Length: 399
Image 1 (cartoon, rainbow, N blue to C red):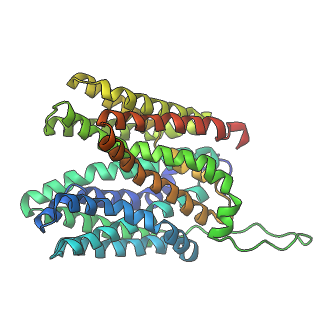
Image 2 (cartoon, helix red, strand yellow; image 1 turned 30 degrees about the vertical axis):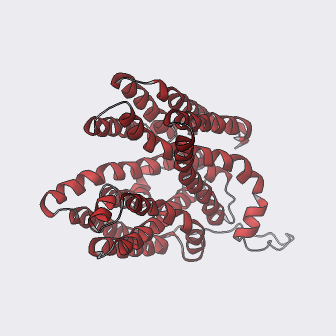
Image 3 (tube, rainbow, N blue to C red; image 1 turned 90 degrees about the vertical axis):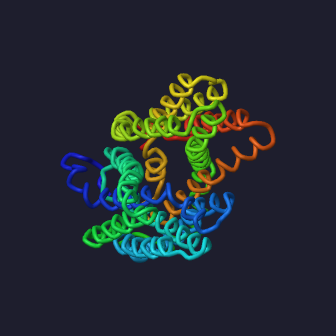
């Protein structure tokens, strides 16, 4: 992997590195708002509709390890093409579903393909980008995915104005097909193992999930724990905003505007955040991001007016935005050159576990105590993550 950036430019690899993820993000963004509505039209209960929406995350969680093995065997290009085909099948099932269970299967397939795309692009950028620009590259990857998720609903809404709910799926089909076609034209990165000197001992066993997990257990149990906390607080943030807005009597339209503004702040910060990580070190972003998010969630239960709610939400979006690409960058830094795909597959598994358990923790505490207590407990995860990173994250001179 390159270790310096004298002649490297992200612009030269922008289409190959970020194009498929942007298009795939647009596809996912186009269907997120309509999955539950489709389920309701097919006769699903509110609870079942919520479960069907959650299958995107569950599919990604279940497929992280198979995705790592598939990418290690066939390479990033074929993996992304295969993921596009899988997603297209899932979208067609959603579009033509005669029953909620068929819709559920389609959504699960889309979630499974999502894990392949994310892992393939993270692996590619970790391999080809010099370490001095790695955080900018991975923050940009996270940023373009968020842009896709932001733009997708608007494109879907435009088509749905003429076609109904099917328009969102049609936009997604076009975007995912374009992502697969673009991925097909991108050459794979050729990973060349270091040459062996005549007196060297034979190489060790070929990396597999078991020996990678054993060899890097300390990393997974320390920085990996921080990763789980970060993803839990991020996933809860998406639930907390509408729930607390409803709790203090904010109408749905205003809530949507606040949520959109928070997303816009989020998207504007990904490249500056990456640059700070590259120039100053990962800790300069990890600590502020987690402390800001944790603090705002601790303050949220004390907001009773619209103005206070907006201010806290915007600062929360700022805290999340400066952390764009943080988890991918920490994982890339910790990954070995041999067995990188397997390592990152396990890293993404931890990430998805955090993203899945966070809302469960919030709902459990809310049911047992109150919504305010649940939000405050989630805020505590931000400080837990900050402590983990302060204790275990390597300082710049250790890279």
